[in-house]
Structures are given as structure tokens and as C-alpha cells.
Amino acid sequence: MDSNRKRILAFIKEHKNELMIDPSFDIVKLVGFSEDDVDYYYVVFNKERGKTHVSCVGKLIPLKGALSDEDYNLMVHGWDLNPYHWAYEKVYDQKAMNKANKLMNRRS
Image (cartoon, rainbow, N blue to C red):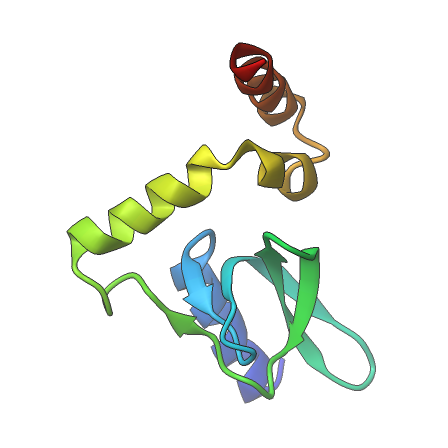
């Protein structure tokens, strides 16, 4: 394993499922790692575009620790309150889909 890959995987392990600022200045959630024969990628979830890949040539800026705990937790709470992203973020997670559907039915 080359040193860049090792460093990237350590960063992901430390910050998985945290909110970040991506190179396009979007708020994203770091969810994993991907690679091909050309590059390494952060797998992130973006509320507008769903799951996307961000080249590790760019940098993700963790918000946890950069903001006060109160501000960061407020952002996470706002992220989690939006049921529309659950349908994209966790298509494979039936519990999340059921939770989103219940919330949507309560609002109708």
C-alpha cells in the first residue's frame, strides 16, 4: 500500500460519517473510499447530487473540531432532519427508508 493511500484511509477512518467542506465548497458527508487505475477518491454524500466521488487530489475540510461542538451538532441535526436525503444516502438501508416514509406521512 503506498503512503498516499495509507494516509487517505487513515483520514477516512478518523472522519467517516462526518460533515465536510469539499473542494467545490459544498457540505458533504464522508462515507467511504474508492479507487481506480488513475486516482483515489473520497466517497461522499451530497444532498443535491446523492453519492459522489471526489478526487483525493482535492482536500476535504472536516467541520467537526473546526466549529464549536454546539454549532457542529446543530449542523448534524439539520442534516439528519432532512428526510429527502435518506432516500439517496441509504437506499440499501430499509430502516432509514421506513423512517423517512413515516416522517413524510406525518407531514401530509
